[in-house]
Image 1: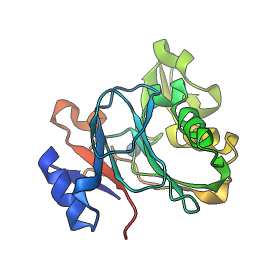
Image 2 (image 1 turned 90 degrees about the horizontal axis):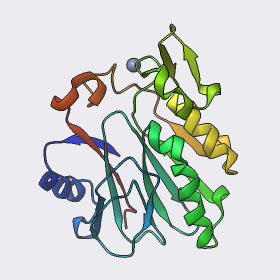
Image 3 (image 1 turned 60 degrees about the vertical axis):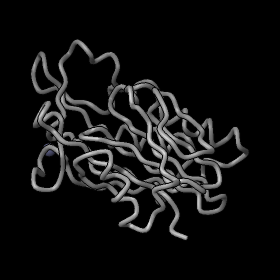
Length: 205
Ligand SMILES: [Zn+2]
C-alpha cells in the first residue's frame, strides 16, 4: 500500500493499523543511488534505495513523493522487496541491481510480481536538455529546444521486462502524483512543503 503520513512515528502506527507488525519494520535513508540492501533484521539502514528481504519475514518501507515506489513479490519463495526509483535510480540501473540480488539467492526473476505505485507521470515530468544524456531516448519526447517530457513508468516497465518478468505480472497505478493533489504528495508540485508517502510491503500472517 502507499499512504501519506505526518511523521516517522506514524509509520509504526500505520504499520500496525493495516495488520503488519511494526516490530518487523525496515526503513532506509534514501540517497537516489542504485544500492540495494539485503536485510535480515528490522531497523533503520543508511544510504540505500532498495530493500530485499529473502523469505519475507520482515516489513519493508520506503518513502516517496513523485519517485516510483516499486514493489517486488515472489509468491513461491515469499521474498519481498521495495525499490525507490526516481530518474537517477532508473538511469543508474537500480531495477537491475534488485534482480541481481534475487539471483544471488538462486531465485528466478520471472517468479516476481511487480507493482509500481503512484508516481509522477509524463504529463508533469519535464526535464531540461542538460540532463538528457541520462535518459533512454525511447521514453522522452521534445517539448521545445530546452525541455523534454519523460515517461518514467514506461521506462521502468521496459527495464523490468528486459529482466525476464512478463507484462502480465507487472501492474502500474495509473495516476499522476502531481495532478492528483487531493490524493498524493508531490515534491515537484509543492517543493519543500511537500509531504511524503510511505510504501509498505509485508506478508499478512
Ligand atoms: Zn500529471
